[in-house]
Image (cartoon, rainbow, N blue to C red; front, side, top):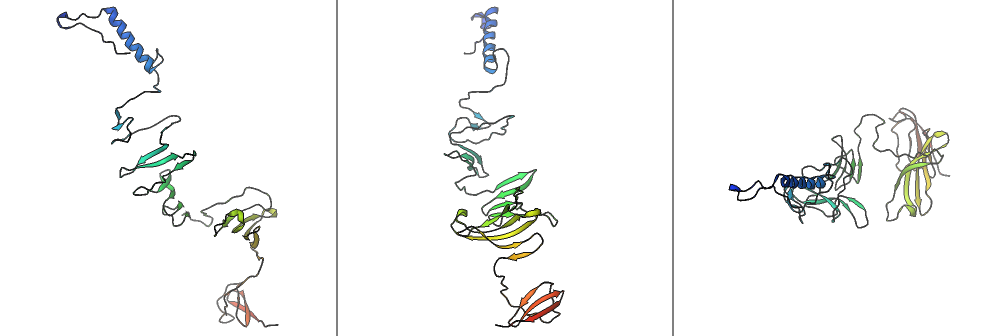
Length: 283
């Protein structure tokens, strides 16, 4: 409805003024339209939908094909905030004024964080908590506690103490034989091809935990070495000491338990700086 103006009469009464009843009727109709638009017709309420065609907000053109100069300074919501766009991308502008797709939805409804197109300067993806950086993804890798990752995955812990750890792998099963570990593959094969090396922890009877090494080449992984909870190292095949070593004397520097060999003797350090030897011969 077009606004109804109340006429008070023209100069020298050349224009007839509205009567008292006509003026009140026009005022009521104007207020009725306002209350219907911004409320339920009786009480003004919260504006849920406003049709704005053209104009600007904070210098940004409403309905423009491309962003104009200016920014929306505040966008807030006390509930769910739905953002709908025909381009399926939420973009941010970098310091150079380049619009970068930051959060987008692919044609197959995959949620993508970041951009597939490289802008002039690729920024790092940083995760903050309580104003402190916790994780960072840059062109080198993903850093947890490391602001400059040196490998594809770089975990750093600066906490002092013997038990300070950078990574925790957990298998919560209490069944004997349950294991957790890390596998390594150096070919184009995948894990299901059984061509990998694996090491990790395996739960044994009585709650003890053994550390084991396994390898697999086209078959189920086979155990190669095990370090028990009691500190016993078991090797499933040959234990090779590839380098010869000859202690200078029976009192040469040595650590208890060290084994060495040369072409004539086998040497065992039986106590600190105390060596024994035994001759070996062919047969």
